[in-house]
Image (cartoon, rainbow, N blue to C red; front, side, top):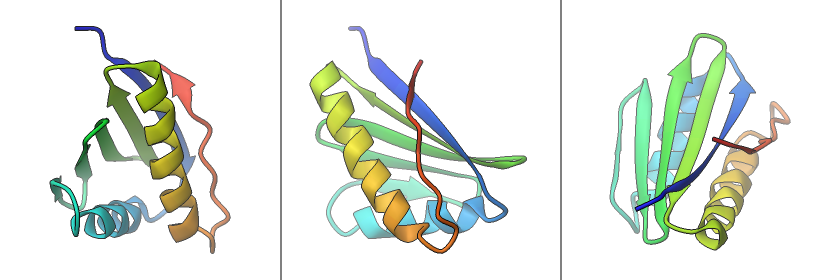
Length: 96
């Protein structure tokens, strides 16, 4: 099965904070696992992974089709941007 995936990177000094906030937010409704270095959110339409890197946070979404991938980009992106409003961070998704 071919997976569709895209990735976005944001420069931030606090990637662990965003991993925690996003994962805790979604954990009320869907399966989530995370620590301070990485997170995994299992949506019905696919999976989002979050990874702390040296200069910031890498977000990746994977899905079985392009429509679901776009939906995941929108859901993860809108929630991230809401949590990151103080730093005014936005996501620029790129196909992988």
